[in-house]
Length: 83
Image (tube, rainbow, N blue to C red; front, top):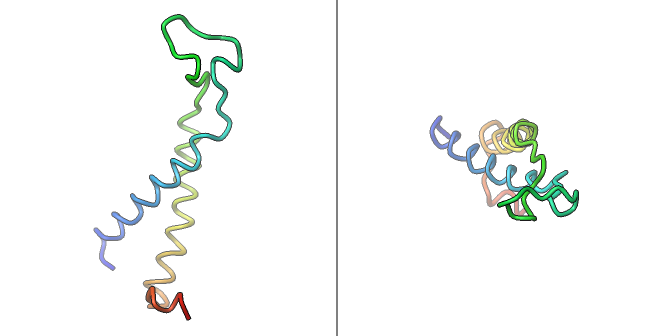
């Protein structure tokens, strides 16, 4: 697998991991009784996006490493998963 396909696969894995980590630790304004005027009550109080982006990067790197080792180091295919 070349450089650009590897970057594309990592990008897809990163976005999937981001959607997995976004809901963790989020409290809405309604839950904390701190609804700011003009905002939705379900809006998050402190989303901690930088922490979630770092966690996403670590998780995506681990998953991509397994993907890379399976396909490029051991030269296995998707058909080998079935066996």
